[in-house]
Length: 358
Image (tube, rainbow, N blue to C red; front, side, top):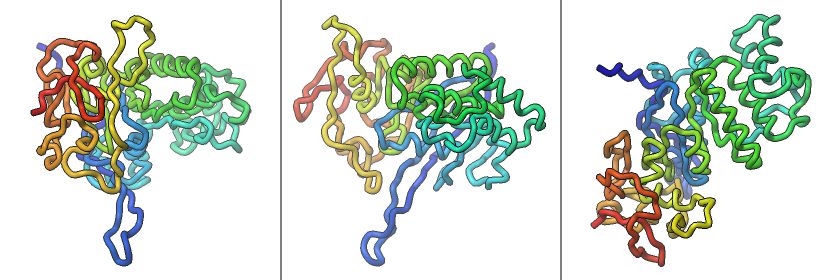
């Protein structure tokens, strides 16, 4: 008899975040940017959930909602089984001990006027987790843990390279011994060689400390390396989620297939060449999202149902869920590289995987 699955560490249910941007015309209706729209998912202890999508799809906004840097417009957010959706700053303090964030830009996420030792020690002082005499030892230990010299604690951020600054940001996030770290594109501003070092650091820390990650990136090759499950976002909504390898081998949503087709393959073998799926047009405005499926204006397989009915995120087996009325590769059973899928002509001269759409 298999052991029961542990409760999710983090659970988002129909999570939405709107930003008011003024009224349309004198006395008109209030316009809003629907940055995150009815997002639902779970994060299990010890896993890495990858979050991918185009720039502007709402990944970073969702991350800030999950750590409650932004107030949530509607929906429910649970952490360690506790509803933290509407908690105030003081009530959130216990949860924030175990829920931390690494920001995208290591240049702007560190106060340039403060020394590194003070930046890393600040969470410890704010939460009173160490006595004054123990803080210095803890800061030195954290610097060593992320691959920096403990002697660097008296330096300022401008004295470090981009990769070193990101290591400082990681050390600061680790200061309170969190259970869940949300990493918002932590390697996108770094050189490729430095990216590999930081990714390896995240992996080593997870193994040593038993961490759980939500890892956000727009580079699907990075997500494939670090994430055990992957969620794909489009225009503020999750359109597909499932085990990373299966999602890459047999994408179920046309948008996922298009993203994966854009990942470069380091091979000169023409048999490994992947058919590129070029999406027509630009993403719709989050101020006025289309009715029905958000992706239907750019989808080659859209039907009348897609234009009128918004698809729910439904399970399709093997831990996969997709929000699509006509999912690709349904019931295929086998994992095939994208280049091996049958191709069909689509409007505009593009091509894509064969779909069961009518």
